[in-house]
Image 1 (cartoon, rainbow, N blue to C red):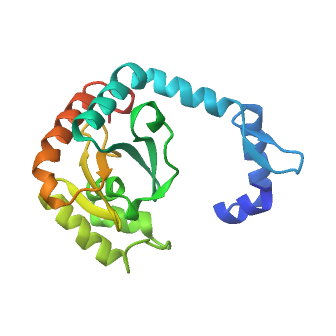
Image 2: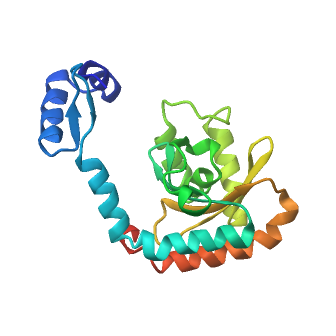
Length: 212
């Protein structure tokens, strides 16, 4: 991204953006390209790798995600809310699930809706203020859907025409959720939900870095 674009997107004065970019560049978090724009620097993959190591993702969390995938025969998703999007730490099956999905609008994600339901309506309105809400006509409709999720304690939604998502909260951090996705309908919920909640409990005991 270029400096002018960042300045407009962030609503910051351009000289301040320049100053912040120089600091981030010095830290290795970003680097300047030949076209005078900025992209991810070498510290980003190092930070990602060390974060996964510190959370015991590889030796404790990943095996449980893979076990859940085998027991449910569905794709497994572990996501964290970031502003109005869900970043998937894991989405898929086996080792291919790591980094298996791009950022996705929270309002169109089963995991995103579950995480948003753990916030108050006032917090949801603040998060969505001034922004489109994919999948919903307005914030009132979103809050009505979130109220239903709060009452039932889990979310079951058809994220696309042929696939559904079933998701539950992780108690370790109110910005994390665990789910399964695939071609199943509501009749599968009584079978899948106990498997999902059991895995969530196992992961809650391991994911220490994200503890609230």
